Image 1 (tube, rainbow, N blue to C red):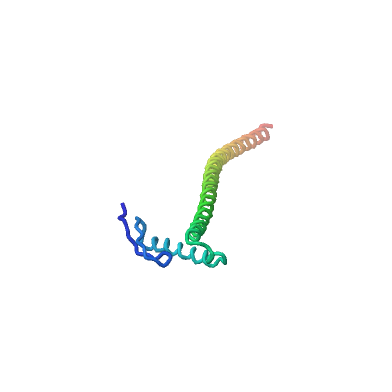
Image 2: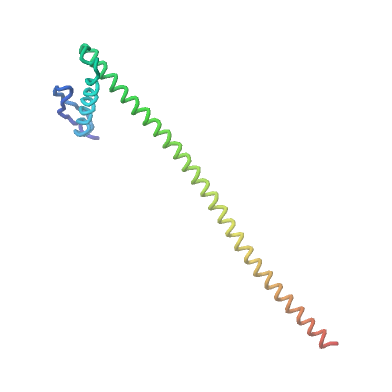
Length: 141
């Protein structure tokens, strides 16, 4: 199990200690994301007329909005991945079916080749017998 990690970060110009089982780099990215979202919120004209609670609520709304969009995209990607996995499974089954049919056709091909060879031997034997019979008839006449 990973050990708990503490990271010193600055969020909204105040120092905080974030703790978690994630890396220090990850915890720093969390602080950076909050700060960059806050910077975007501050750019809005009406921001400076708001009280502190409303400013924090707006920041939370923006963070939640970003989270929901990312979660939705993640869910869409998971669904795509599942569809692709299903399609891959279907294609694998199809490949196995074709491989089986190909093996069956190859066996049938080999059997037919053997049959052709046997039939050609019979033809040669019959032609030889016919030639011998014709020769016997000519000499017996």
